[in-house]
Length: 282
Ligand code: G3P
Ligand code: CA
Image (cartoon, rainbow, N blue to C red):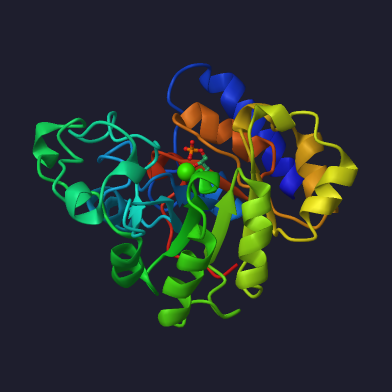
């Protein structure tokens, strides 16, 4: 059945060429729905609101994404804040490294007006603020961003989760990931009951089966750059016992392409490209 759906999907892409693919109309069941594709709102629904802000996370939740993805870094005074770049320049009205500012200083910045005037005054959220706002409402894919710059970040994340009793096996929609695989290993030791994910940039394009098997000793997911994904890679990741959520889809065509490759989830700036559906249990 999955193969049949894959073929249908591929034919759909070919027919639609560069036009926007037609999603199922009311009353029909879409290919996406049948495949139960996991929908991850990248940095929140960052195609619609400024990334890594409460507005983007709320939008992702409203759009019924299965997970919101967040990037965690640390302020000068050791507080966990959510921002993608290691500098403030692109997404706030500040300049310089995140690690050179206290939480109080970071909270004074405007993290919204670079995206649109409508979001002027939006603040850089704290990790704890987002845990408190979204626990039990949606999955949270927690990226430890550049953890090599922030000694002890894994422990601080673990403490915040444990304080909220979000560290047990029942919290299987709290997932921790990083491009820094040593950091993933460390986090796994601190939070053995939570699922973890290895992020893989294009330098891992030729990842071997042996490497995948090693990742699987401490990870439940292998989340690669979407440009390296093939059906063969998907099969090899599954054979190693992991799931695969590629990043970052930014168009309906890219989402459809990933569907056709039989991935388990899609990390996208636009949840509507993946599918609107209620939170599902993994
Ligand atoms: O979740 C995957 C994705 O967020 C990794 O890339 O650079 O957007 O953090 P980046
Ligand atoms: Ca990220």
